[in-house]
Image 1 (cartoon, helix red, strand yellow):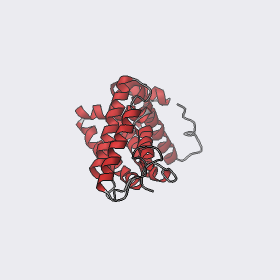
Image 2 (cartoon, helix red, strand yellow; image 1 turned 180 degrees about the vertical axis):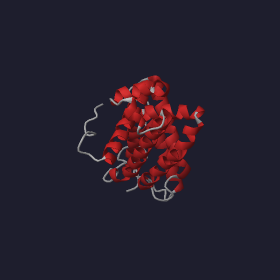
Image 3 (cartoon, helix red, strand yellow; image 1 turned 90 degrees about the horizontal axis):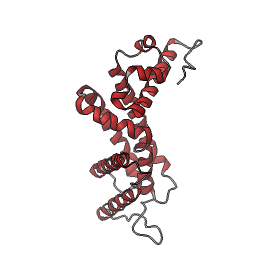
Image 4 (spheres, one colour; image 1 turned 120 degrees about the vertical axis):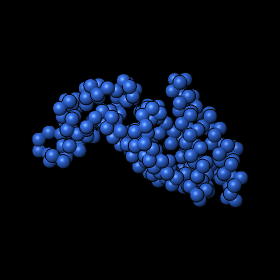
Length: 220
């Protein structure tokens, strides 16, 4: 990483903000590449290209840096989740599109890898767990708008939404273990169909059925 953009000509507040952002980004990269325990402070600072002296002005400890990076990642994820609903406009099968977007954005790549590192770390680091719990709750709440726009469930999904996120999380874990290129695609399709049928049974409005196929799609 480069410290470009953090040099002269900027206010102290801007330099401080940009330095924190640089350190947070490096921390997330290191959590993905080296795991929670492998992402030592020296490894993070090397990735960021920042000295210990400069780092110490912005974070009192490595634990604080890790927590700040986790909060930033989850806050970005919550903002992205709230924006998903707008991307469903014009999609014939809004429900399947929603599930696939959630999978690609939140259960693949760096977000998935760092998420699992943090979940495991929270098992023994109660301070980190306490700090991240409300952020995890906010993330789930952020999906409700998108879920409600893709299904006839006026409540925004409730337990079924939460269960769907947990199912996708389990699939993501299996994907990591199997190291297969999207080996869970068929299972996602199965879960989408099961969920759609359940929603269909609870509401008078039928979900769309693409021509020539089983009960699929979502209400317009």
